[in-house]
Image (cartoon, rainbow, N blue to C red; front, side, top):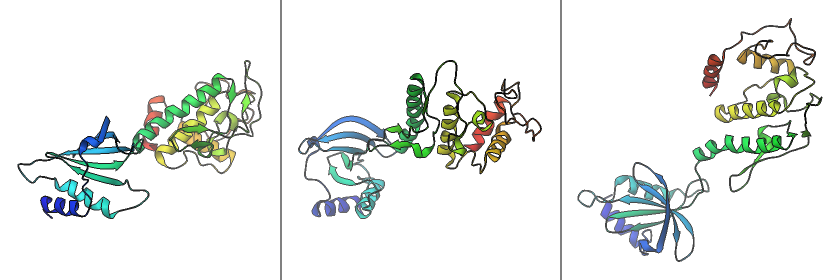
Length: 268
């Protein structure tokens, strides 16, 4: 369909807004793509916050780009709760504005922010002398604004210096730190950091990093990936502090830091 004909039909059937572009108050640029720039804007008449996609028109050639026509046509046909809403189309002399519902962030920004937000929440807990001891995806809650919250404090414990002796019957198996699996009598904030690291890996790969079905299977899965710890890489692991360390068990090749990074890259 020719661009001019489409726009005439669209205007007749109410797709093209009769409001002028100055009805929208542009507040800031929020994105840019191949075919246009997206701004956050506010409707001066209704107060509604919207996203404005500005498309420059080439009046010397075909006018409205075919990509814009295709986008408008498809969004008018595809009405669904999980598809962004096209609210309006505004035509000026040399620009076309697509008016969308405003959504606060995209998935990439959300995923990029998650690790930092989780670490901030955990650091705050640790700075107040509290271990969580049961970090797993089910205990990380998200509100309607996209803010993530640490939840479920049933297994949380205060810690101090010197570090106290705690039970090892904590943390869901897949996210349980090696020192807990080895029955270490003393452990501290590192057990929460381990759990969070497992969660980060699961966010990237969409599968559990160490999905063991028993404590011994969980340890073997960890050691197969990272190598069997010894006194060189983990001072004290063979001492009485970790009574279930099995020196006679299978030994998996210790992985250097460089190779460990490569392994994690492959997992990602």
